[in-house]
Length: 83
View (cartoon, rainbow, N blue to C red):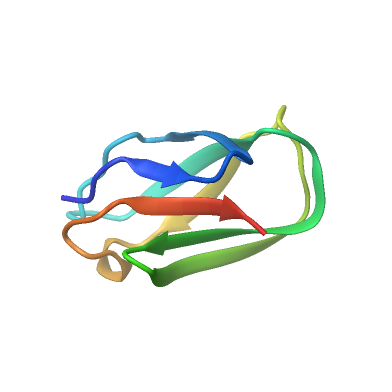
């Protein structure tokens, strides 16, 4: 079961806080400050899981990123960073 999410100071929080690799899910997050032409990188144990390009990201909007359980390892934290 993957652990809690962690990341840089640009990400305020993520939902869900704990996940299992048993099924696909949607990761929701908020950024700490406005960004333009940015990306969200999700990695686990140094391995890239997914990258999403965004024209804008603002704290008032919840960013939702679908993830497949088959792309995740059974253990380890997901790291979410803004590029």
